[in-house]
Amino acid sequence: MLGNPVKQLSPIFLFLPYIKELNRNIEGIRDEKVISCKYFSEILLPFPSLSEQTKIANFLAAIIDKITHTKIQLNALKLYKKEFLQQLFV
Image 1: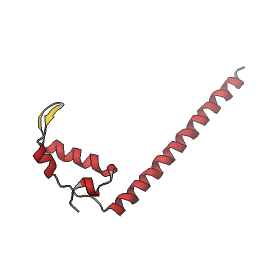
Image 2 (image 1 turned 180 degrees about the vertical axis):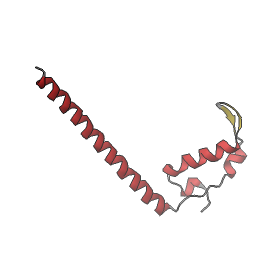
Image 3 (image 1 turned 45 degrees about the vertical axis):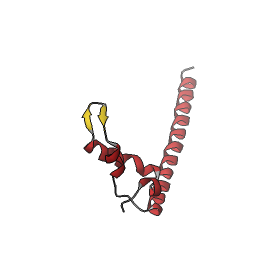
Image 4 (image 1 turned 120 degrees about the vertical axis):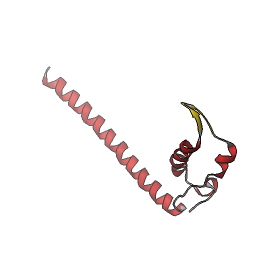
């Protein structure tokens, strides 16, 4: 599907494809690259339907939640290890 991303694109899908496409068509060196407003407004990128975007976003959110939960568990285990080692050598 091609279309205007402002109307039919989830923020999760907005940035990466745009950045890849822009890097192919901008001019300049290093960090001082320039793109014309005309070119920028004419870029049409393929993207999944809104319902598919929602499914993908929900899946990614579940992964992020799992990572967060695992980090909390890891920090708790590190604290437990530290306390255990302190008791062992006291």
